[in-house]
Amino acid sequence: MIAEPVTQPDSVVIAASRDDPDAFAAIFDRYSAMLYRYVVKRLGPEVAEDLVGETFLIAFQKRHRYDQDHADARPWLFGIITKLISRYRRREAARYRALERTPAEHAAVGPDEQVLADVTAQTARPELARALAGLSRGDRDVLLLIAWADLSYEETAGALGIPIGTVRSRLNRARRKLRDALGGTDPTKERNDG
Amino acid sequence: MDEMTMLRELGERLNQEPPSTLARQRNRLSAGPARARAVWRWRAAVAGGLAVILAVAFALVQTVRFGSREPAASAQAADVLIRAAATAAKEPAPRPGQFAFVHFKEGQDGETQEGTDWLSVDGRHVGLLRRNPPLGGPPGRTGWGQEWACEEGDHPATDLRHPPSCEPSRTYRSDLPTDAGRMLAYLYEQGEDGSKADAAWEQASDLTAEVLPPRSRAALFGAMARIPGATVVKDVADEAGRRGIGVAYVSGSTEHRERDILIFDRSTYAFLGEKDVLVKSYDGRPPGTVFAYSVLLRTAYVDRVGQLP
Image (cartoon, rainbow over all chains, first blue to last red; front, side, top):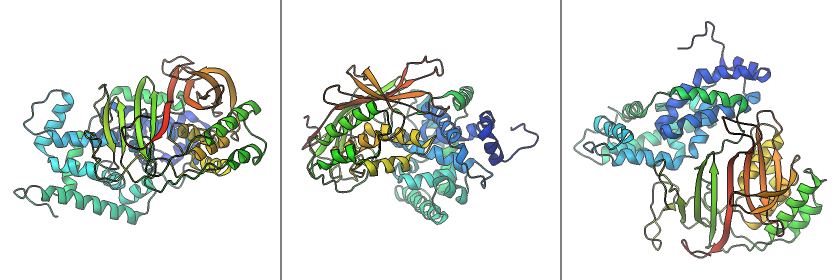
């Protein structure tokens, strides 16, 4: 919970931090947990903490050029962290592949595997993980900013610096690939064409 | 249940709450090194593009030497960089179809990775990445592993005679400017953070670890000679223990706390490696700590993946 009686827009805080660098800490306090939860889903806890720190470090250094028309800093921050995540594409793919490989009945050998086994057993079908690993980076970024970071189309466009039409087309393509993967591999399972 | 709902559920399952140690990252905002470079970085991959490297233009050296305005680095530092540019320009150029072989080591904040990579010169062949620790492995794993350099998917390389059919990734950097003036413009354009010169230097420094066509590498050092602020370090060792002459750059802005040193062979001016040294203590690490580095141990051109020069 944010315990500020009057919450200033991010843009105002960032503007103040130009002359008073310490003020930028408020942006960290507002969004570090949110960014952590996003990056931990994509890359796991081993690198999440550092990437969140790096995101804020970059944001801090770029604060002078923050566009004051944007009251909400989330698209800006998610844009920065998306670029950082792209450097870990191997790790990300390996993470999804681990989901894919872990059968539901597989005995867990460590805490990570336990989590992954639970995932596979309870909800995610391996097909979903495989499809996620197989998406192009641009499509995956759009899909996960919307599904896992809860950004709107417009915010996603702002984060990635792409037109909103491109967000739509990438999302549509990504969703289609997921649907194909979910419906195409096991005909006994219900199809999810909705 | 539609795919977005399933995906959100997967996200919930993968989620973990931030640890209390996350708050430590807040301290980096006022004290941290500017270059928090990822040690396991996927070295910049450039898709496609014919890299027909023509004969090295001797004129390049002249462009660097006479075509610029007054060199902006200290005269000594500019001299080292211009000599390095001349040396780079004389390196042999590859033929299309060949592979650039690179043996490198890089690290950040205590973690290191060694690699021998084979990169397709014309971007049309699948390269090979041999790394220790292996790519994509769980943290803490050691030993060598090798993978095909594909844009998508995971392709362990078991039989080098049969590369997978995939879109090649991490190909040779044939997309970069080949003269110092345009390289300088490119570096300033790419740089984003901090002061312009700081950002341009940082871009340039990252490129030194890449495998570049001779003309681009020459252009890179020529361009760096024009970035203000560099100084000479007379005797410095790279992280492979090779001693040489250094060109150092300390970022001017208050947030920056690192000194970036490029290291060259003292007699040939061949590029050996680069390291970032903490200028002020950071997170318990004293000044002088090598925070990040890369060394180029060997580069050459060969005809087949897996072939050693």
